[in-house]
Image (cartoon, rainbow, N blue to C red; front, top):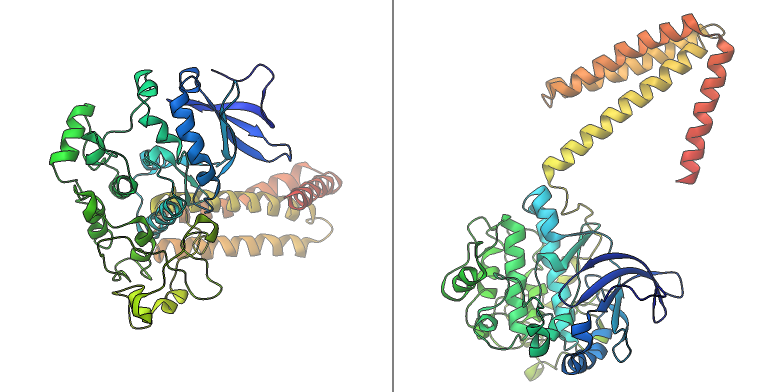
Length: 449
């Protein structure tokens, strides 16, 4: 369909295209208040399918109630005009599949954050009566280290024969549940299967059912076990339960945040798996529940009045014990996009910039002070040289990082050489003006940032 001729969809002003899928083109847009949004303009063959639009319209009201930091919530929609569209919160980040392809499998604390964030997102979506139907790595955006699920509820259009006959993608092989591949409906249990397949891919960097033709991958999903060989031991049992072929054997989404609420990787999960529907349980006063209250999560009263009945298998401290161990967004800031090797490379780049930058500034300041204040000039050189020697010695003997030691010693020698050249060929007035300009630029940069 493309962008409307006037550059607007309802109250949203379209800025630039972000991509296209089986159902429409996604545009970066601004709402009337100047806030960014992602507006999906439906393709003509989708807009012409009255059955699909009617089904989507019924889900829109439920989609509006989803409130979670891990879900790109629906902001607005218009399905009865010439240009049907849906507007969601714009998530600035990279898809999970791109993150894994660039940096390798997600591990350690970053995998814990990813698993818990996806579990909270799925619990919030299901508590609102919405089924995602197309959860996969491409529909998980990593924003500041936190996972955000996009396109929830949109895949209900897949149920329309007219839309699928027009060429819309039915889903990604290896992330669709066996019952969907066999022609059954895509219920909440299918989302739990997709959740586990997505986490397995993130933890191993491999598709859990391999690659190849869609028919071959689909056959493996229905008849073979997933490849969970490199999944950490604290996560592997839960993923196996979620990837069970029988939907009745999979835990409900409301239970996933509690199963992942262990204080650290390797610790026992707080709640054991049990069949049947389970209520969402909030932590004690002041803690955020696993789904937003507006999402429709209303846990029934425990039978018999016993607190243990609400969360059977929890430790003796009860639900209140979760308050000191429950994970919250923002508690850890390391991103899934930066594994330990990438962080080490980043630290090396920052150290190199710091050593060279401070060296240039020290050489200029020492050369400026050489004639009027020779003692200050020597002091500056001595302090910088001592810092570089100490840092290089620590890097060489403690960390055995020879590259860093060579850089430090080279900077120390280079500063002395640059100081001698500047003092020999430039007057104190010229050096003073240059030093003042550098200081002014640094102050402006600090104030503007």
